[in-house]
Image 1 (cartoon, helix red, strand yellow):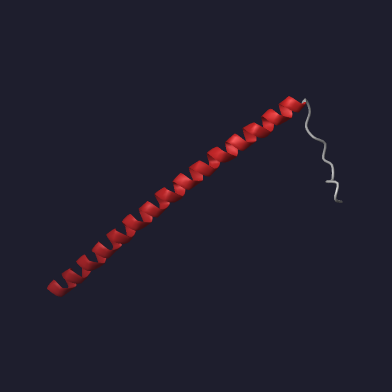
Image 2 (tube, rainbow, N blue to C red):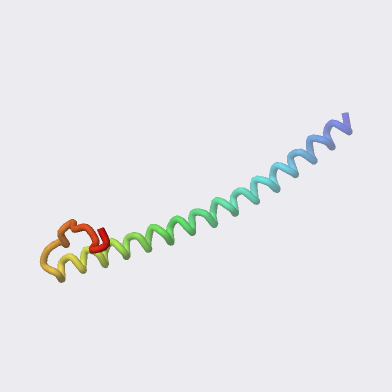
Length: 66
């Protein structure tokens, strides 16, 4: 019985450690996602500002190398 209890305690300890490690990975990934979302919003704002400055959206034209 004591061996079984010790084995279970070891498993729980391992699982707790893994859970903490996964939590830190998820937190870092969320930070990266938040940063990327802010960058996308800033780029969208810049594009909107450029469109407003030009007065009208650029027509969809093929680049000159076509």
